[in-house]
Amino acid sequence: MRILEGRENLATVNIESSSSEDSKLTNPDPKNQEIKYNADQAPPLGVASVKVIGVGGGGSNVVARMYSQAIPGVDYVAVNTDAQHLLSIDVPHKVRIGDQLTRGLGVGGDPELGREAAEESREELYDLINGTDMVFVAAGMGGGTGTGAAPVVASIAKETGALTIAVVTKPFSFEGRRRQAQAETGALLMENRVDTLILIPNDRLIALSDETMTTANAFRIADDVLRQGVQSIAELVTVPGEINLDFADVKTVMAEAGPAWIAIGNGRGEDRAITAARNAVASPLLDAPLEGATRVLLNVTGGPDLTLQEVNQAAEFIGRAVDPEANIIFGMVTDPRLEEEVRVTIIATGLPTEDNFGPTFEDLLEDSLSPEEEMENNQEPQIELPGFLKRFRRKND
Image 1 (spheres, rainbow, N blue to C red):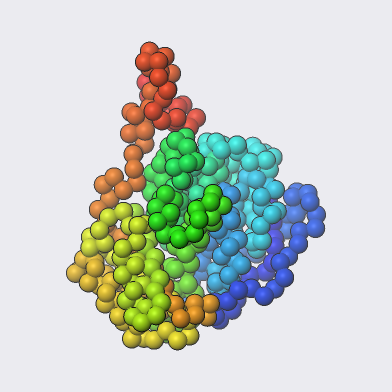
Image 2 (image 1 turned 45 degrees about the vertical axis):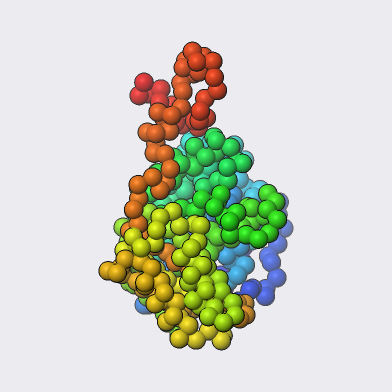
């Protein structure tokens, strides 16, 4: 495993864009970029240590975007098998896994190779994560490293005792059935290895955008929602504000919570907080009615003019939309970049889980045809199974 170093971590009081110049990696050979990672540096007493680990290309891109926005008190790590991609992003700590297996060339979209790469580097990953209070694992499901390695990283985080939250995306329909099948399997594996799994179906993001939906726009929006999912939780603990939560508050909602859903709403003008809350409740990202939620984490973010009355209005609106007995904890964060705008982010758990994550591992096997059945029926397979599922099927036929 190679650990690469970029800029030092930022520690600021307010959320603001970084004004430092981006660092330049002058040596093109990633093997000569191995520096050091000070995993022994503990946060001050009473402050939770938080790591955001992006796994694979998509997850690493999200971490790079978060780092550029400088959320204080968070340690950022990009984990990938592709050395060139790691060199192209600006993240403080870059971890190349599976050196012997992939030689830094990626896994060619094969989740099994992604898993093996993470297992090869398991000991180093454990040392990297050990001692962290809260770990976010961000990944795009469907590819090789994100799908295969992210569940391994998550299981290591749980093994260390960290509160482990995964925020992952499912691919757009236009990315193909094979990628979707791999994503479903990756999500199922991830669900069993984390405290909370927030799954974002990319297809639903189209309804959130007024932009002309080019392919580039689609992936940018997907990355941004993934970022907001992580940021909305992390900043409640790490960013000073009028209403702060501590690590124990977040743990109350997120520990052993299982599947969770994210909803984001924005509001401007008169009654902007109520508008933002209403838009969040109506978010197409929600896979089930919000009234079934039993645990809710609420983040109300606005500019310097955000008032406590507005925060209370948003919280009351959300309170009426969820289970009357729901445990709701909320915080208020001031972000100078949100001029005259309020953003409400909801993380809801305890919603009905049936069919929320699509077909199960077994469903994928049943719905696909074996090569012999395809020949017999002279038709294309209904679902193109990834290689590691085909191997599983052969073992069980």
